[in-house]
Image (tube, rainbow, N blue to C red; front, side, top):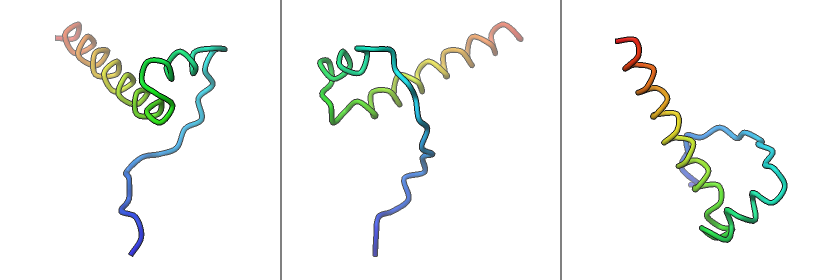
Amino acid sequence: MGRPPLNVKSTNVRLPEGLGERIDKLVGRQRRAAFIREVLEREVKRLEDEQSAALG
């Protein structure tokens, strides 16, 4: 049968030296990608909300 689609698009991101290791210390290496996705989702939503409030 195979895996169900994940509905994600792969994107290569370069992190500053040491940031990956700092994230790993906080959430573990196996959770790094999920952590980055969650943080980005939260920040994008915050910026969208901020922009919507400014417009109107």
